Image 1: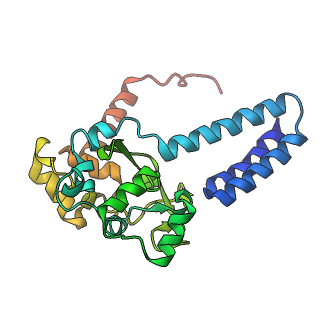
Image 2: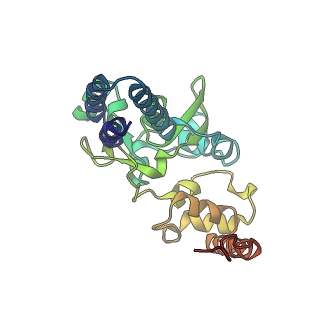
Image 3: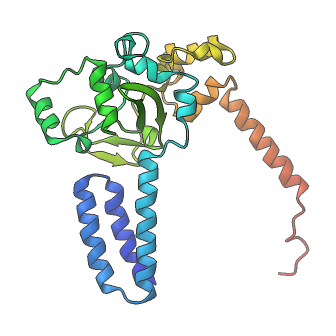
Amino acid sequence: MLRAIVGLAAVLLLVLAGSSNADDRASRAGQAERSRLRGFDRTIFDNALRSLEEGRHIFRFDTFGSEAFWGGQLRLNEAIAGAKLGGVGPGLSPSAALALGLKVDVEALPAHLVQALRRGVVDLNDPATTLALLRLNAVLGLTGFFDGQILSSVGIQCALCHSTVDDSFAPGIGRRLDAWAARDLNVGAIIALAPDLPRHPDPARVRSVGREPAHVDGMGLGHALERLRGQPRDARAGHILRSASRRRREVPDRGRGRAR
């Protein structure tokens, strides 16, 4: 069993690297390690590796129903598409998306598109190109839902804030790096694109998060969403800590009085 765990740890390091090259190395390492295992050790290894693959797929692609908020309530999909493509406003071009800190997975792009990008014949100032990238699942942490040609909703995944790319093709475009922090992601500016913020409590406060980047510099998505909901995160954290402290006082120490 120990040998299975050690072998799996080596494969895990390659899996976390994220790129297809790392995937290939992990697959080869996994097959080699599996061939050395016998009996229940092999069963453990197979189950653990399957769980890793499932977890990575969830991390990269599962929206957990968040499209009901980002699309259904904030209508961010309409701002991304723009008025010419069934949305509102000018739309979000790839150049603008990259400036907001969004990333593109070059390994999700077909070869002909990669070559077109190299030749400079792809219009990176056209929101239609952004929609094409969303159809390819090439924008890290962002999933587009389409009704025919219309971007009907958009959801986010863990990878939005917790992955980046290696910039191997161009700044913001490259191979995935899972579990790396998206340090230049401008959450506030992304939220400010939404056309339907006034539906939520205290819209002035929400707009301040989006329009003043200083309010979200260094903050993750969770912090920005706390601001979006109108409750300072620090106050909420303080409440949680006070509640935990109160519960600790209420629970008797069962270890007291025991002989040592």
